[in-house]
Image (cartoon, rainbow, N blue to C red; front, side, top):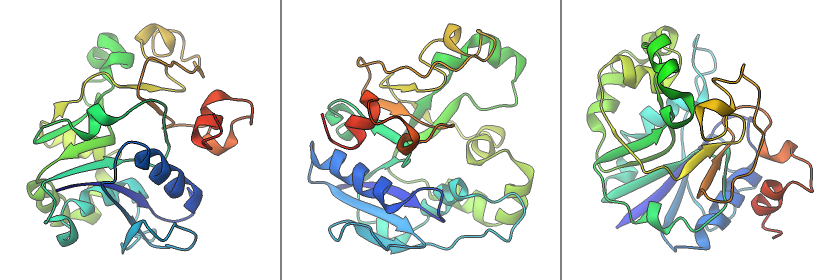
Length: 232
């Protein structure tokens, strides 16, 4: 048995983001849908919710760090495979290939749009993105993080870089993803004077909104906003 998971912590994203992600998943599967959150108000009743603590009082902590905490949650032990999605995505095509993908651990390869130049100039920075993570058992990642977690959140530029610097080696998912701001090729942003792309590409399964604008901030006429709102 598999499951889909997400995180909603603080007020960065509203319950609407959880509900829209849930509706998008339901188009393709009746898989268990789980949200770890510090505030379940407004989340649809058929979403499975579990409490998770925030740590705003700790320097360097922000909600994405809770992904690593989630890897140690007992509630997920009964599931063979876990498929995590960030809330700031738009599922724009059939994600059955993602839901059926078999791997021990795989995440998004951002070198597809950051390019080799970025990798050479920034060897200390991760060229992956955990906005979608498929895994079976990441207890070792959880243990490595949790034993000194308050130190790690101060030292690293987010959980992706924690994994990168500490030598963890997930596989890469197929090229199902692109960035709304950075596009899907180095020439779009990283090798184009950091000019935002802000374009929809219908050939991919998922669009990542991992920087501004947020999905809800798009114009109502934007095709991605319509897909997100399930109005097309």
